[in-house]
Length: 150
Image (cartoon, rainbow, N blue to C red; front, side, top):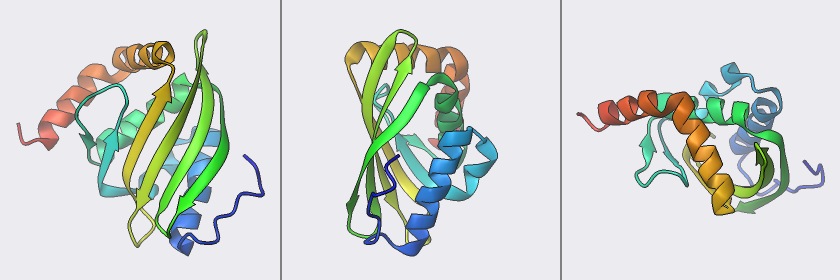
């Protein structure tokens, strides 16, 4: 990631979380992730229609996807106000190269409260969705049902 990216308008807690996020992505060390996520975080995936609520399910998704992506790299970061960041990335899933963005909203404590991902092209998204479904589909479905009170 480009060191010249400006994050000065971000709240200090958000800057710390973004730095820790990049350490997680670089290392794949899932133990770095829990303190970055609010208990009530909502994850929005490009592969499923309904949001994925809660820290446990988001941890599962994010710690799995970093295992699937190959040659993952962030290219640019966009900041909006003091608590919103967009990270542009590229990666490979098997033979497919993809581009995407992570849209992340933070609370005043610097925890991620919303994490939305958009990915293109469709074939790469389909390959990612298939691999995610193979690895965590049933477990994630059960977590979503529990979160919905069912």
